[in-house]
Image: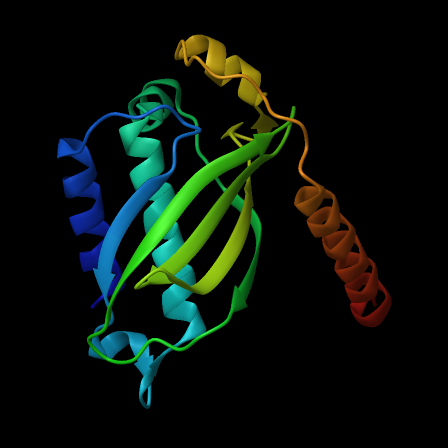
Length: 179
Protein backbone atom coordinates (compact mmCIF):
# COMPACT_ATOMS: atom_id res chain seq x y z
CA UNK A 1 0.00 0.00 0.00
CA UNK A 2 1.28 3.46 -0.82
CA UNK A 3 3.05 5.09 2.14
CA UNK A 4 0.88 8.21 2.05
CA UNK A 5 -2.36 6.23 1.89
CA UNK A 6 -1.28 4.11 4.86
CA UNK A 7 -0.28 7.27 6.78
CA UNK A 8 -3.64 8.90 6.05
CA UNK A 9 -5.55 5.80 7.15
CA UNK A 10 -3.50 5.58 10.37
CA UNK A 11 -4.03 9.29 11.02
CA UNK A 12 -7.82 9.05 10.56
CA UNK A 13 -8.23 5.86 12.61
CA UNK A 14 -6.15 7.27 15.48
CA UNK A 15 -8.61 10.17 15.79
CA UNK A 16 -11.38 7.72 16.72
CA UNK A 17 -9.43 5.31 18.90
CA UNK A 18 -9.29 5.49 22.69
CA UNK A 19 -7.03 8.20 24.12
CA UNK A 20 -4.00 6.82 25.96
CA UNK A 21 -1.19 7.76 28.32
CA UNK A 22 2.15 8.09 26.50
CA UNK A 23 3.71 5.11 28.26
CA UNK A 24 0.89 2.68 27.36
CA UNK A 25 1.54 0.04 24.71
CA UNK A 26 -0.45 0.52 21.51
CA UNK A 27 -1.32 -2.10 18.94
CA UNK A 28 -2.10 -1.61 15.25
CA UNK A 29 -3.15 -4.24 12.72
CA UNK A 30 -1.68 -4.32 9.22
CA UNK A 31 -1.45 -6.50 6.15
CA UNK A 32 1.52 -6.87 3.79
CA UNK A 33 0.61 -5.37 0.41
CA UNK A 34 2.25 -5.88 -2.98
CA UNK A 35 3.98 -2.50 -2.68
CA UNK A 36 5.64 -3.67 0.58
CA UNK A 37 7.50 -6.65 -0.89
CA UNK A 38 10.73 -7.37 -2.73
CA UNK A 39 9.98 -10.47 -4.78
CA UNK A 40 8.00 -12.34 -2.13
CA UNK A 41 8.74 -10.93 1.36
CA UNK A 42 8.16 -7.57 3.04
CA UNK A 43 11.23 -5.38 2.67
CA UNK A 44 12.98 -3.58 5.51
CA UNK A 45 12.02 -0.11 4.25
CA UNK A 46 8.33 -1.05 4.43
CA UNK A 47 8.77 -2.43 7.96
CA UNK A 48 10.50 0.79 9.08
CA UNK A 49 7.62 2.77 7.57
CA UNK A 50 5.22 0.64 9.64
CA UNK A 51 7.09 1.68 12.80
CA UNK A 52 6.48 5.28 11.77
CA UNK A 53 2.75 4.52 11.73
CA UNK A 54 3.08 3.35 15.34
CA UNK A 55 4.64 6.68 16.30
CA UNK A 56 1.93 8.60 14.40
CA UNK A 57 -0.76 6.66 16.27
CA UNK A 58 1.00 7.31 19.58
CA UNK A 59 1.35 11.09 19.14
CA UNK A 60 -2.26 11.47 18.04
CA UNK A 61 -3.83 9.30 20.74
CA UNK A 62 -1.83 10.95 23.54
CA UNK A 63 -2.94 14.43 22.46
CA UNK A 64 0.62 15.46 21.64
CA UNK A 65 -0.12 16.25 17.99
CA UNK A 66 -2.69 18.96 18.81
CA UNK A 67 -0.32 20.45 21.38
CA UNK A 68 2.55 20.32 18.87
CA UNK A 69 0.57 22.10 16.13
CA UNK A 70 -0.61 24.76 18.56
CA UNK A 71 2.95 25.39 19.78
CA UNK A 72 4.76 24.81 16.47
CA UNK A 73 6.64 21.79 17.78
CA UNK A 74 7.80 18.81 15.81
CA UNK A 75 8.89 15.28 16.70
CA UNK A 76 11.88 14.25 14.55
CA UNK A 77 13.35 10.78 14.46
CA UNK A 78 17.08 10.97 15.26
CA UNK A 79 17.89 7.30 14.72
CA UNK A 80 16.38 3.86 14.66
CA UNK A 81 17.83 0.41 15.06
CA UNK A 82 15.93 -2.63 13.84
CA UNK A 83 16.36 -6.38 13.89
CA UNK A 84 14.42 -8.52 11.44
CA UNK A 85 13.88 -12.08 12.69
CA UNK A 86 11.32 -13.68 10.41
CA UNK A 87 9.94 -12.77 6.98
CA UNK A 88 6.44 -11.55 6.27
CA UNK A 89 4.95 -12.70 2.98
CA UNK A 90 2.46 -11.03 0.67
CA UNK A 91 -0.99 -10.47 2.19
CA UNK A 92 -0.07 -11.79 5.64
CA UNK A 93 -1.64 -9.99 8.59
CA UNK A 94 0.49 -8.76 11.49
CA UNK A 95 0.42 -6.41 14.46
CA UNK A 96 2.68 -3.55 15.44
CA UNK A 97 3.10 -2.96 19.17
CA UNK A 98 4.53 0.44 20.12
CA UNK A 99 5.52 1.81 23.52
CA UNK A 100 7.43 4.78 24.88
CA UNK A 101 9.94 3.07 27.19
CA UNK A 102 12.23 5.85 28.42
CA UNK A 103 13.02 9.55 28.14
CA UNK A 104 15.60 11.99 29.42
CA UNK A 105 16.13 15.73 28.94
CA UNK A 106 16.76 15.44 25.21
CA UNK A 107 15.72 12.02 23.92
CA UNK A 108 12.58 9.90 23.83
CA UNK A 109 12.96 6.16 23.20
CA UNK A 110 10.14 4.21 21.61
CA UNK A 111 10.07 0.43 21.29
CA UNK A 112 8.37 -1.30 18.34
CA UNK A 113 7.56 -4.99 17.94
CA UNK A 114 6.09 -6.55 14.81
CA UNK A 115 4.17 -9.68 15.82
CA UNK A 116 2.32 -12.42 13.92
CA UNK A 117 0.45 -15.17 15.80
CA UNK A 118 2.37 -14.33 18.96
CA UNK A 119 5.79 -14.65 17.31
CA UNK A 120 8.09 -11.66 17.07
CA UNK A 121 8.87 -10.86 13.44
CA UNK A 122 10.95 -7.71 13.98
CA UNK A 123 11.90 -5.30 16.74
CA UNK A 124 13.03 -1.69 16.54
CA UNK A 125 14.12 1.03 18.93
CA UNK A 126 13.50 4.61 17.83
CA UNK A 127 15.23 7.64 19.30
CA UNK A 128 13.24 10.87 18.90
CA UNK A 129 13.18 14.36 20.35
CA UNK A 130 10.80 17.33 20.52
CA UNK A 131 11.88 20.56 18.86
CA UNK A 132 10.72 24.09 18.20
CA UNK A 133 12.75 25.39 15.28
CA UNK A 134 16.27 24.29 16.31
CA UNK A 135 15.65 24.30 20.07
CA UNK A 136 15.24 20.95 21.83
CA UNK A 137 12.23 21.03 24.19
CA UNK A 138 12.73 18.93 27.35
CA UNK A 139 10.21 16.09 27.42
CA UNK A 140 9.38 16.75 31.08
CA UNK A 141 8.07 20.17 29.95
CA UNK A 142 5.69 18.43 27.52
CA UNK A 143 4.61 16.04 30.29
CA UNK A 144 3.82 19.02 32.53
CA UNK A 145 2.04 21.04 29.83
CA UNK A 146 -0.18 18.11 28.83
CA UNK A 147 -0.73 17.04 32.44
CA UNK A 148 0.32 13.48 31.68
CA UNK A 149 0.41 11.27 34.75
CA UNK A 150 3.62 9.39 34.19
CA UNK A 151 6.93 8.96 35.94
CA UNK A 152 10.20 8.13 34.28
CA UNK A 153 11.45 4.60 34.75
CA UNK A 154 15.01 3.52 35.38
CA UNK A 155 17.08 3.72 32.22
CA UNK A 156 16.98 0.26 30.61
CA UNK A 157 20.31 -1.38 29.78
CA UNK A 158 19.02 -1.65 26.20
CA UNK A 159 19.21 2.17 25.90
CA UNK A 160 22.84 2.20 27.07
CA UNK A 161 23.74 -0.48 24.54
CA UNK A 162 21.87 1.39 21.79
CA UNK A 163 23.74 4.61 22.63
CA UNK A 164 27.14 2.85 22.69
CA UNK A 165 26.44 1.28 19.31
CA UNK A 166 25.29 4.58 17.86
CA UNK A 167 28.42 6.37 19.17
CA UNK A 168 30.70 3.72 17.66
CA UNK A 169 28.88 3.98 14.34
CA UNK A 170 29.17 7.80 14.29
CA UNK A 171 32.90 7.62 15.14
CA UNK A 172 33.44 5.09 12.35
CA UNK A 173 31.54 7.24 9.85
CA UNK A 174 33.56 10.33 10.79
CA UNK A 175 36.82 8.41 10.37
CA UNK A 176 35.81 6.91 7.04
CA UNK A 177 34.02 9.79 5.39
CA UNK A 178 35.51 12.99 6.73
CA UNK A 179 37.20 14.99 4.06
